[in-house]
Amino acid sequence: MAALVALSSMANTKEALSKLYNAEYAIRNLYVDTVNEDKLVEDAIQGMLERLDPHSAYTNSKETKDLEEPLQGEFSGIGIQFNMKQDTLYVIQTIAGGPSERVGILPGDRIVTVNDTAIAGVKMKNSDIQKRLRGKKGTKVTVGVKRGDDQRLITFVITRDKIPLYSVDASYMLNDGRTGYIKISSFGAKTYDEMMAALDKLSKQGMQQVIIDLSDNGGGYLNAAIEMCNEFLDRGQMIVYTQGVNSPRNEAHALGNGRYKGLKMAVIVSQYSASAAEIFTGAMQDWDRAVVVGRRTFGKGLVQRPIRFEDGSMMRLTVARYYTPSGRCIQKPYKKGDKKAYEDDIIDRSKNGEYYHIDSIQFNDTLNYTTLKNGRVVYGGGGIMPDIFVPLDTTEYSTYYRDLLAKGVIYQYALDYVDKHRGELKSRYATVASYDSGFNLSDADMQAFIAAGEKEKVKYDEKGYHTSENVLRTILKGLIARDIYSDQGAYSQIVNHRNPDLQAALKVLDDERQYQSLLYNGNPEYAKLAAEHKAREAAKKNKKK
Image (cartoon, rainbow, N blue to C red):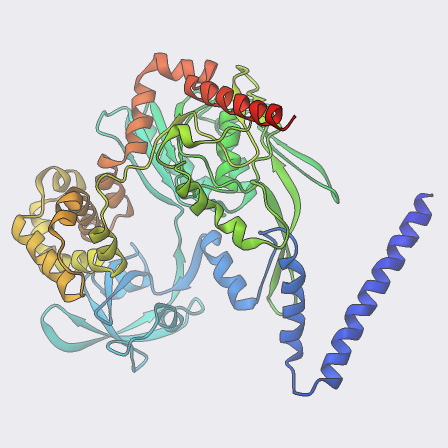
């Protein structure tokens, strides 16, 4: 019987492929106009994938390279972080020990030519500039630089080299002197090594507990999440398992050799935390290993397998679902072929009030699971619900703030300020900590900022300004620090003083009674909301009867 089923399946496959081939042959040879056969095949692949789940996708060779580069941990280039300021490439910082630093490029320099081609004042796209600056390791590129008020062109010949890309954006001790903070932006090939380096550094500084911040982390490599989980779990504890119709169940377990199995921990997540970030968070929550703080995560529980083609293009095909150790599939519902509705879910959550009010969250009581150590209730079927819900704070945000952000005024003003005051700030404030405690923008600075907005046609709104003044000052202060100290962590360190997610995480870590209560009993508010949801659903059923 099995043999007959297999033969029938092969016959159906052969017939389907023959139909596809004949259609392509007819279009190529009979269509009224000339067709691009390669493009025709690509469109056919994309068309098939679009009728499947929202995460199966096709990328051409360039798109594939751009997609994978941030996760590989390095690329070849000249080693600068830059921004565009009035159509001019402005060097924010150079990579320590990188090609640009070695030849003498400095923060604040303006690169105006690349290999004798003007890139300043010509409205060139950032992507086009990157193409000119990046290239194979060992190749040379000549750049023309203007420095300070000197209008003379300084020429540098830079030999391209491997440039590291970091996924740990920040790691430092909080002001209490006992809590470490690590911000991880993605799960790449080197994320585990970066996390371990951060943990080791903070341990030497007296860390007794840690906050792992995965907010807005869109995920990445599954193996990176597994390696990271291994550091915090006991031997044999499951981290994740995957399974699909054509993919047998595959389990990953902790080896028991982790160095931080006893470290007290909180994990921060947001509505944009997805995929590998949810695997890590789910494992920590299911084993009652950490308190999770923030808002319900995105809900991506599908595993993609990369299928590469000879021309460098790639198809990422969903082959399985992944499940947390308790058996939760956190993939949010979707309708095949309806990608727009799937993507609009984040907006719908906002419209429904989920990000702002805990009683707007809909708990599906049919998707309750229990944690594997303490037996508390957790929820599946659409992201991971944190143990402590932290609403988004919109009290300081205004239309005026939104318009300043949309027009790039906030970032441009910070660049201008650093350009004028770099030397003064560096000499007055030797460290990020001294800058944080001693520096604040003056009222005159803020008036100049308002004027910069007016120049970009953002009309001054007095009420909106006073509503958002504190957050504007904080973000500007953080951006200035990031550029002055050539440290990605500087912005996080300053802005996080106002981060309610971090404050909530720190509060629960310092309150041992609440910490243990959450790990053993869960959030009592959630149980109440789930019961209310169950009662509403029962009432609906009775009404139908």
